[in-house]
Image (cartoon, one colour):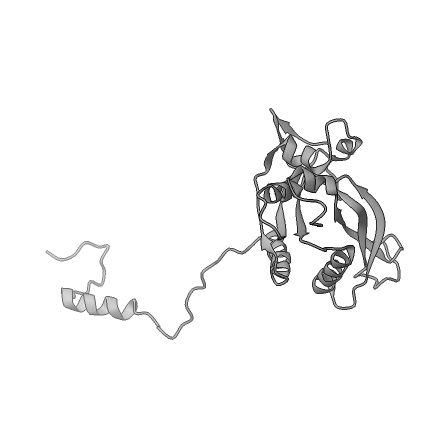
Length: 239
């Protein structure tokens, strides 16, 4: 009876021939490069936090973390910042019922000091919150890394040398540091630390406001009252 007109040139093939033909047309060239699997990566903040943590781990420090929702005692009072202290206006923040979104990772220091396991060498990274206007230079949340060293006969010289080592490791061997007197309720004496500008190499530019220096952190010796609040003998231990 013939074939319908839509098959003008029919070619009959056995099932075996059709299978062999399929193998030839669909064969895989094993010499071709494979498809590259797309993989995720760490966030730049995570990479930097890990780098800083590793740096201090090399100095004998351990990493400590704590919750982002804290009590007033841990976030303020134990750090020598009572309710009527003017320093609280420096850290206007977010309250949730009787708790506060931590304004610094210093609350983790209190948690660790209250355990009474001395000496302490800790580095505390984490996210913190402050009720600030969002701009190109500020945000209501940011990340912070704090360090704490408590032992017998700890001095400001230990603090300065640790920070100098940190600055050189993070920003380059030629980096210089400058300590300026400052005020923090939980440290005495206190200082702000600047590094020589890595952009202009200290000559002065828009980044460093033509000063040659860029402020990167605050530091100081642990205030004796903070040690007392955590049940630590302030005459034996320094931080």
